Amino acid sequence: MLTTKFTPKKLTFGKGNEVTGWFKSTNGEKIQFTITNDGEITQTGEEKILHPFVVGLYEMMFSND
Image (cartoon, rainbow, N blue to C red; front, side, top):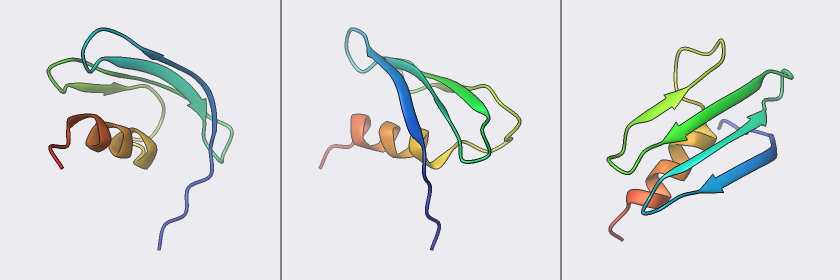
C-alpha cells in the first residue's frame, strides 16, 4: 500500500473544474500542477509520473459518481 504524505500550500479553484496549486512532496520537492477544464493535467517536478495527490484530485473533480 502506498502512503503519501504531503503539505498542501496553495490550491486555487477557477471557473468550472479548473484548479492550480502546489505542494511539497515527502522528499522536499516543490510540485506545481494545473488541471484544466477539459481534464488536461500538467505537473512540474522531477517525477515523470503524476503524483497520487494530483490524480486523486482529478478523479474527485471529474467523477460522475
